[in-house]
Length: 481
Image (cartoon, rainbow, N blue to C red; front, side, top):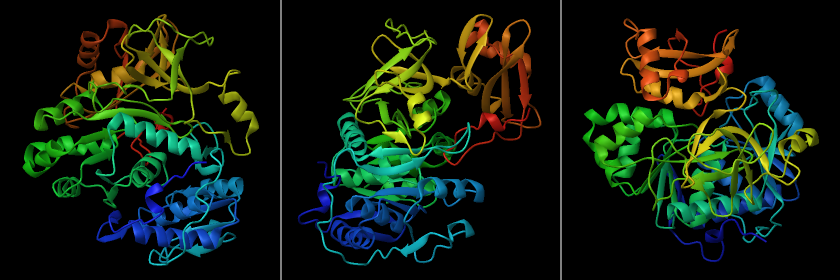
């Protein structure tokens, strides 16, 4: 049996657990409010949560988990079709929402319960559900079809947060600041449930801005979580913002995830603050797999080493494990451990396809691994692995090289059919100066000098902006044809 939130049981005390803007709850207040939610929804298997960046969302999810049910976080920005699919697929008994939230017509048939963050219920509720019991159903981004609901058991949440506590030396003394959405694993599991499991505090910015980061880190916050677009804004602001530089310099831990942080942003932040941002690697289906450790080398461009309890291997296209890690051989990442999801809801076919016969999850991510175990992601198998001239090339390393060019603001790399090479490398560039974009041949030479001649882009296309999703990931399938 796994108690997810030991700090909420017994005498929770008056330490602040959650703060969203100027609203906050102590552990005692959170325990009472979450218990009240649990009392209202107990007996239901799945409960949707309208996941705005608010106290109500945090209280709602904790209440669902305390009641032994499974929470289905809903993205308030989902389109009508996507939302309708998720509701039909997950069939929640009811939806939890803030009293002032306006729900779309697609929610009309789902019974609504408003969350009162000042309500008082009685603990304990069933926070001793079986470890394998569903805790969350989180829907994937749906890049290759309708979103799939990944069923995450309680053991996955507990094991991934405890592994991160080991890797990051994360304790109840830490105060986390972030501005991440709460319908994804990053913001919800790591960014809210993580501090609560440790007995620490989270300060949510509501909407990310660098002034908020500086304010919170300069007034007691110790950790910052963000995605690359956030750290890019920080890197841009640092030269003219001494308060921000001071804040980052004083932070205990700066963590980036959900996509690769370009090396040039790593370097700009380190130059201004003397601090290194560390990266970790996870997925909706696996939670966290690897991380740079707080007591390890913060090696830019890598996602560190496997977390405690997590097995990670690279395999060839035919499934043969790669045993010699040389920092060059590209393989697909496969993962095995207690951090894994149990199934895609209502999709036994997709679940079976996702696992090997001996229980390894096929991530679809491509990587190389250094001799000392550090993992470097080079892209997605479906969109980022380019086979050109007999070589297997990861788009990610070319994107990083392009971003080191002073004339490049944003970059994406794809492959397209070529009668001679099989696939040619295509670079999609957002120029730093739209009126004077960098020359295509100069960009190709720039990449060839840093990586290898066969990795240079053969075609360069210029855009005003790259299409991105809510977490800042580039949506390559949305690039113009």
